[in-house]
Image 1: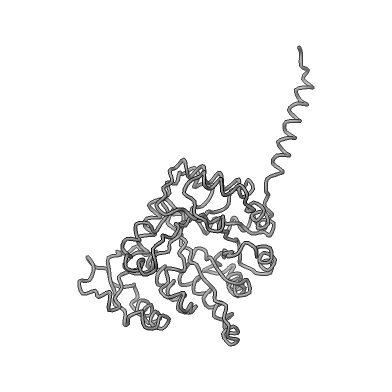
Image 2 (image 1 turned 90 degrees about the horizontal axis):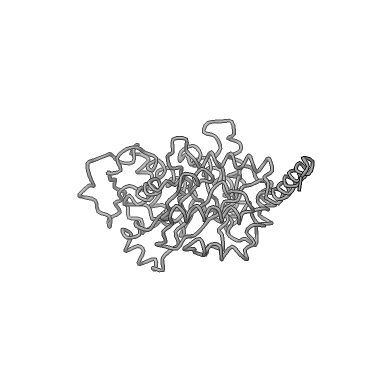
Length: 378
């Protein structure tokens, strides 16, 4: 049997047409979404391969009318502090879109200046509100992405567990809606405490996330360790032990790291060098960045004073980026248990006035009295 050259060309053309149709089924990014990808990719990756730092800000919703009126100016001031003093690479923000708007405006107004704007990622806490949130975000400048906690924050311990959860998930449609809005979806995966992931596991997992997102690699994936069943009292009494499991245990292959930025969550309490230890571990494990959760800020749940929060991140991130020796100590004026907002303000004021977050030394101060309000590093 002889096949003519015309038949061969027709077959090739048909194959190309089918391939184009398959590709058409994949999610495509708008020009606005591509711009957001570029800005976030630049923020999540350091040219020098250093760990990028991204604080989490929880914006309160005041019940007092006066406080509500003052919130806009406080959020604007906090935004400026994160950009100029803390020098965050990107910032994750939880709260209402209305509360976020002043921060977005401050960042966008800084475009073309130095320091330039810090990309904002909106943390979606309720998937049911995605549609309305995206509609509101259309009018807010400075926001480049939306973080989705996959499967409602349910812990996964293997790729198979992920695939099982993804079967009946509506996440693909949610990611598509975010891309259609000109933003980037940022998946958050909560890993079971103690679970270990080999390079092969990580590659399979990233491939699975890509499929869940609609066939397009997300610009970044946030990995968070699930919380243990210990009570808060037990956690406080075992702060030394929690250092071991404070960061996700991933073996990240270089080939996959080129496709998406790996961001590791840090929830450890500040003090005793715990934040330094956690960020160092992420850097050793070849993560691109650290997501510094609001849990790091002492007493933030009691009274999330934005001035206090701004002062904390300025001091903490300044130290985390410092090349100086971390074996130093400094003394705070008061114990934090009394009045967290004011006490922490005095605490971070001492740090700022010192000029260098304490003086390097050959080891910890033997006179350090932690129960009396002394703290050693972040």
